[in-house]
Image 1 (cartoon, rainbow, N blue to C red):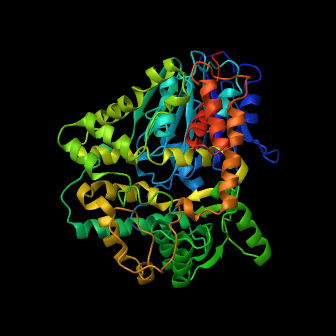
Image 2: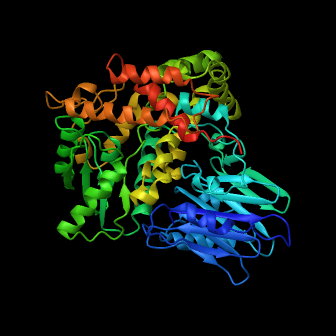
Image 3: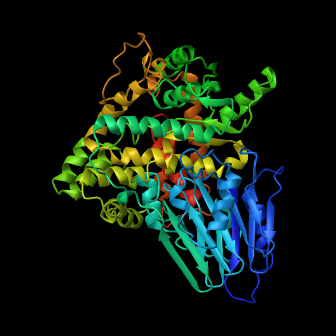
Length: 579
C-alpha cells in the first residue's frame, strides 16, 4: 500500500458528514489512473491508493466490520529459523494481535510503514507509525470527527477542518528545513512521532510510545562484537526486504552507502541493475562505474540534464526504458533499492565533535548555537516582516533544546546522536512520500532498518565519529566493496585507496556547466514569480518589497539570492490563511 487515509465519527449513532468519504478518497492521488480501494462502515471510513509495488494490497476487512490497512511494510522480525513473511501476513498478525495485546507485535517491526486498524466490537481506531516515523501519518483529532492521512492535502480537501498557520513550525521549516516533534504547518493537525501508537475510542484519544530509542540498552560490547552484529543485522535487513526477488534496480553513486547496499544484494545472489545520475567527470560518476564493474552490476549512467529534478522521477523514467528495451523480468520493478542516508547514523555525518564537546561540558545553549552554525541553519530574516522575524527567531533553538531534554539517554553525545537520528531523514523523505502518486516508486532502504539501527545506537559515539566505525565495518563485506576508492566526506577519515586524478567533487559549483547554472537561475526566478503573486500573499510573514528586491538582485546577477527565494517559496507552499 502506498497512501492511506480515513475518518472516524466519535459519537455512537452519528455517522460521517456528507461528502467526507468522497473528499478523502479523491485527495489521496492526483493520478487519474488510480482508483482508491475503500471501505465504509457506520462510523468509519478507510481509503488507500496502491501502486502495486509490493504485489499485495495489505487491506483486510472482517465480517464484523473490523479492518486494517498498511502503507509500506512492517517487516516483523521472524523468529530463529522462521521464514520471512509477506506484508499481508504481517498485516494479519497485527490485525489479530490488536484484539488482545496491541503493543505486543509492533516492537518486532523493522520496516518503514504506517498502519491503521479499526476494531468494530470495541469501536476503537488504532494508528501507528514505524520506529522512526519515516513514513508520515498526520491526524486531526476533532470533537466529533477524527481524520488521518499519509498526505496533508487530505486535510486541505475537508472544509470542516480548521487550519491555523503555525509560525513556530514555519520557523523550523525555514531554519532547520523540517519541523520537530509532532508539529505541522497547521496547529490543529499533528504528525505522529517515532514509534507512536494513537488509539481513539469515543471521547478518549490516547497517544503512547511503543518504542523509544533512548531506552535501547547499551551494555558494554567490544568494537569487534558490534561490527560483527552490525554486519549480520544489515545483511538480514537486505534479506528481509529482498523477499526472494532475483532481479532488482538500485541507485549506485560513488559513495559508500549505495555501495554497501549493492554489495549485499550481489552477495545474496541478486541481479542488480544499477543507476547513476551524476554529472560527467565527477567522483560520483566515475567511482560508481568502477565499483559496478568490480561487483558485477548491470550499470547505467544517465548524467543529470539541466532542469531535471528529483532522483525518483529520473529513475522511474530510465528504469522503465531499460525494462522495455531489454525485457527485464524484475519481480517487483517499482521497488527501488537505495543507500539513502546511511552515512548519517553509521558515518556520523553532520554530527559534529565540537557540538558534542559543548554538550558534554554542560553548555547546551552553546552547543545548539554551534550546531546551527555548522549546518548553516539561519532564519532568512531579510525577507520576513519585522514582527515575524522577531517572534520566529527564538523557536528553532528552543525546539532543539526541548527535543534534547525529552531524550532520556545519560550520555550527552548519545542524546545528540538520537536527536539527529530521529529527525535527519524527515526532510528528504517528506517530498518522496507526498509525491509517490506521481513518480510511482517505493524505496527499499536497509540502512533504516530498525533492527540494524539498534546495533548502531549501542555503538559508543566516539567510535562512530568521522566514519571510524564505518570504515572498519566495510572490511566485513565482500572484498569487492573495499577494492575500489570511494568519495569521502570532507573532515572525515579519508579513503585509503587513491582516486583517479582530475575528478570533480559531485556537489561543487564548478562541476556545473554554464547551461546547468542558467537553468538553475531560471528555476529560481520562476519560484520567485510564484512567491510574489499577490493573491493569497502571506503579508503577516513575508515582506513583499524585500522579496522583490532579492528577486531583482538575483535576476541581474548582483548576488545569489536563491536561498531567500527558496525560503519564500516554502512559506507560500505552507501558508494557509485561517478559516
